[in-house]
Length: 279
Image (cartoon, rainbow, N blue to C red):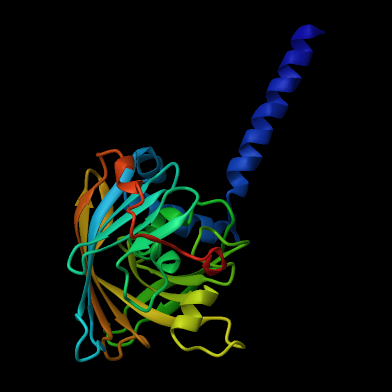
């Protein structure tokens, strides 16, 4: 009887674990699951990505619509702890910093229009999108087919990615991505993204009734492999597929082996704590 009881409890425990794992990502159907899992594997696999202690990278963006007296280049060294999701960004060309220490979001000498809170995971999401599809609360639609204009008729798998609730600070439950996956290589080729952070919308001059900014389109020009994981190396931002380019981006010097340096989270005396309403 004790053996039967033990076996029963073990089965229930294993079943509970499987339900939790299966429930982490909400797939529309088995085709969606197959397409997304193939993409994740093509980028190096979720187990490998989840095992890294932190990720650091240089994000370089050229803003094609900069003001006359504004630096056209947005350049930052970003570091994110994979477990705590603490963040430090060194905007070294602007002598500025943004950080999230687990409680407060603070910035030093931040003069750009984008609220610091909205910037925390902005590029982190862009370079890790294939893996973030496996986060709890992610919802993935049915697979459609999309012929990207200007690509010689090439067709990509299209999957819309939404969230059951706000995934992280600085994002909203309304945020979404539309993923375009190469059916031959299974690599992410591009995506659309829309932003629902209210503070960001206000900073961009959007009216109160507007709930989303975007979508904007991204096309990944080149990938790079770092210790077995595939990340974008260069991509472009466009208002529509294959239209004029409004932003050029480079991701370089990716480090996925060095643990997060928590000394970077020590708040300087001249730092400003971001309003919690901006979250």
